[in-house]
Image 1 (cartoon, one colour):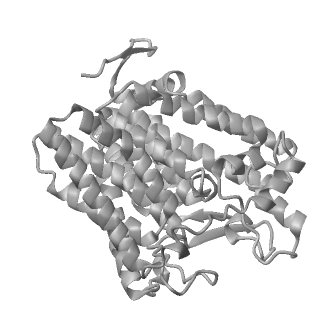
Image 2 (cartoon, helix red, strand yellow):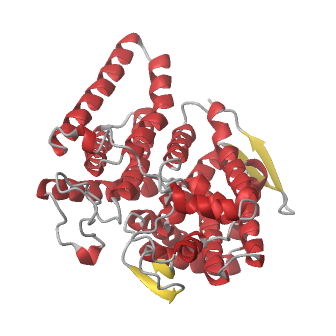
Length: 449
């Protein structure tokens, strides 16, 4: 009896930590510096130090708590092993694991092994977090997780709107707010909320919009009111517009396109007109808000060319096309190559090229295969919570064409693996995972209703 209570209490703590992780992952500064690898001032500080961000602390607590639970809870050991085995064999988890192994092998040629070890360890711990999240989602409701994400996004959106109205930061430096970038125009203000960059906030709000979609779907299915998740989605949508993140807005549209198409295809004629009209109204309202924020100067932000900072990273790829320079080493290598000849050295704003530069062609291939192992299920499971979440992952994969933060910025790598973990949880819930007395897992797929 006592052991059972401890197990339930520990699981409640695991859930609380996973909620805190996603709630705080948008706050990408301040960080606790553990070690300075390079002091080169023209390289962004986050790429030349070993540091722990705020959500990382809660990831480490989750990791320690889970190890403790594994020691005394035999049933949990069996269930977690069952989920892990299913993820590895049925949903491409093996490829994410092999990617970690390839990162370790990179020690043989990496320019700086300290940064590589930290980056690899961070990724491995987050991969374990994703499995823990998947197991928890498989066995219990994920509503608290979704609500934590949505609540955080609503708060960040409100802050972003106030920043936009204020035409600048609000002085919340202790909470992670940043000052206006020196290179940003003064004609308008792109709101970052409490994140390190408006694009980061835009990506986080994008994920929260899909969480709202899941909550709306569940409420409709359970004949509950959808007013609160709809209102939350509207607030988050306005917050996204204030970031003026083109990549986030475009990717959100692409991610939601299959969902809207499915609703229009399967709904009654009247529903189609309502949904279609609602989408048009949202687009018009967003366009009008963008016009107001930009004071009518759309060229300054919307139609201006996108800077990807290809030059520096391409030079690294040209010199190390096959094996890369090692995990976490891209900007250290860029710094060595360019020295102080450039005022601001920045990494390529594309995750796939970023990974190619660091992990070489084998690492890029593994990452693409791992992503495809998830995306391929989009064609199999329409009109489910999992399918909505797969559309979210699709949107993230599109954003990664234009930005690097989903992999390069540690707090947002937390969000990336958190999204994957919740998706694994949804998928495993759709399968009956049964353990034999000998603890050998048997997997039986459940067809969608």
